[in-house]
Length: 108
Length: 115
Image 1: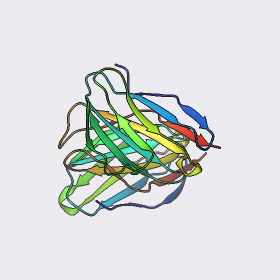
Image 2: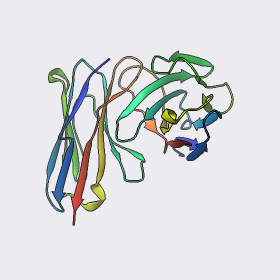
Image 3: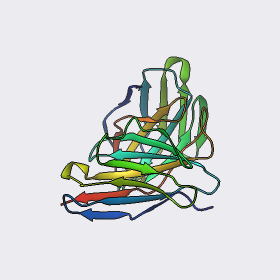
Image 4: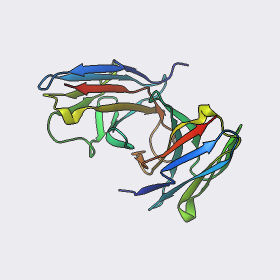
């Protein structure tokens, strides 16, 4: 299967700071999603981004499929951004491979 | 448009009992995927189903686990004779079609605790 590595594994930020989360994957993919798992365990779709760049408010993401990585940018972080951010990649029949996540703690 | 529904949200079973987890996909979606998340880990694929068909069950343990997606009604993930190691969050996702460039939408999960 595809190997997915996320970095950093843990991140502590002061409210208002910016951050970049990285996702590297080992093979060609045609599906890539970023998720936020909130402290209650719910998975929230952030971006569906197999290639290119997208922005949604304070969040943006870029995937360079040919170089096998994706980046998630969080600007002006808020305490509600805390939780675990997962990158998931897939190909063919959408069997997603998840990374181990980046655990983000935003302090007030 | 309702999202992916899962029930129950929390399930407690004693060792040796059966657990039945249900998933109703989003309206218009005919593809269902089950994932398992152990504590402090990422999600792991278990099985991919379409109506009345199991397409890929490569992530499903060979024994005690089964899944179905009947013509009518929700998809069911069934775990027989549960053991403590089955304690995890089980997530269901759905998509409108299969193949490339296809977004999956996840339900809230069922948290199974085996005593």
